[in-house]
Image 1 (cartoon, rainbow, N blue to C red):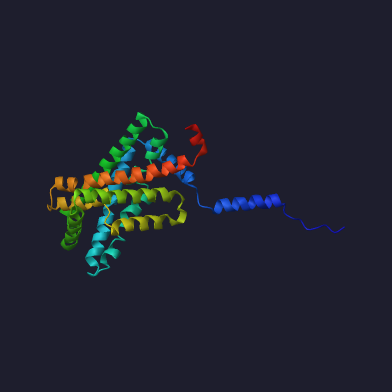
Image 2 (image 1 turned 60 degrees about the vertical axis):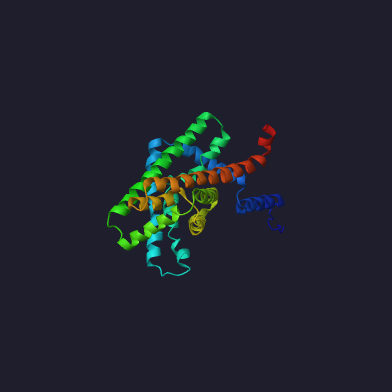
Length: 283
């Protein structure tokens, strides 16, 4: 007897289509939240020594942003589009730090905050402050070491060192308030980058380049990238160390914290909690 061809069960087909749709859909905010929460918990579990050495490496690596941009500014012709091209070099330090999994302070305005929002205890707060303090000090020491090498050795020719000094003058030119506001934008954008990266897959490099490039061309104040420029100017004798710290590092730091913690960690955590019926029922 002729057997009818084997047919796929409608229920199986529906399940397969549902699975394929699930795989092709963008991850929900809750999935992203959980991924970053787990990463934040892992960072908070690291020893202070491990955080310090990773932070020191990040501070040195961020010097590549100043070096690449400064060298490109020196060799590019003086034209209206000069800054648009040179700021591609600004992304270099961020690429090395993020892909190399080094500890950068502005990334940590998001990742350890989510565990703190989940477990609001004094112990959790102290652990976040420990991480922030160790990473920030290590980043700044890396900035200082690189600035001293650039200013007091012949690694770069005088014309390029003059370009670095000019970059330092530019970051110190705005008022305390303007640096603070620009710092909020920078902190917001870098924390958004961290929020996006877990599911960027093969587009990770482009996410880092595009977001940090916009930070560069808009002259938003990133506390580590800009401090290297300010420190290089101070090491060259162009300004005092107090002017470098008070005129840029302090307001940029405050702005980065506000932008990262309030605009990204706080708001994105709030949308996840508001969308979670279990949390709402518990509340």
